[in-house]
Amino acid sequence: MRGHIEGQLGTITIESEVIARYAGSTAVECFGIVGMAAVSMKDGLVKLLKGDSLTRGIHVEIDEDNMITIDFHVIVSYGVGISTVAENLIENVKYKVHEFTGLDIKKINIFVEGVRVID
Image (cartoon, rainbow, N blue to C red; front, side, top):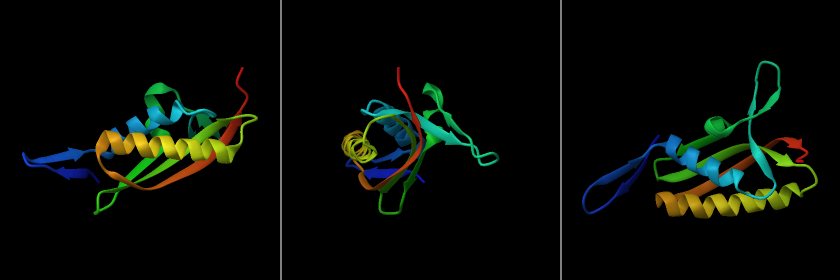
């Protein structure tokens, strides 16, 4: 579904893919996040996604009230507190996506798919 913003001059429509790309780039800037993850349903393997495919680890839903729900599948750094990383991710994404789109965030779900040691 698409987000809609009604203005004096007309309607602005925002695709969920645009929100996913922006949320993904915001997420990888957060402390403790190594990157987005893709889980293979066939064999259960987790794969770290590179730059252009960040949106595969993110699912964005926009309901009829223009409220956004974002699901992140992430890989976190070894040795950091997962709850601290999750809180930081939620606050950063919530603020930046709202500023970017003008739409409110209903919920952000974080699924930690793996842990990686960073050199």
